Image (cartoon, rainbow, N blue to C red; front, side, top):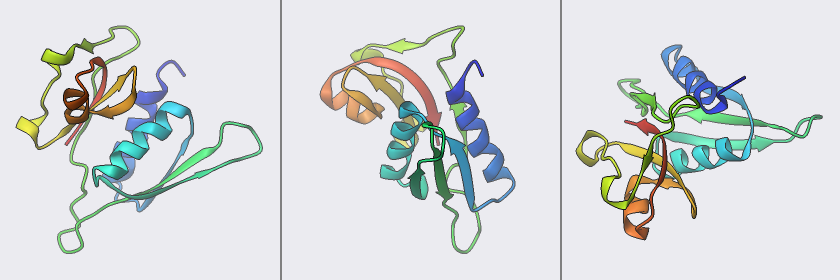
Length: 132
């Protein structure tokens, strides 16, 4: 697999389109951090890391839907920085998603965080994806 983050986002996207409640994804440290950010921002209901016989492990994510309309909390997941073309942003050029209603997930020297946290800490980094 050449792009594990794109695979992670695609598995989430496919599970949402199929109205699944839980999705299992092979774990890595960057995927764990992206999952933590999605949970903190309220895009997923809960998550659990499970260790398997191999040392990689699995992330189980419970997806969040509106109780009445059954609309998913995540409407769009877009991969920005790809292995063939990395996208970096400095402090002044960190993107805003949907004029602040969405979240850009950025990996910085201080860890994986949202665009708002990166602006507050005044750090730039690689823009991984947009979530709205």
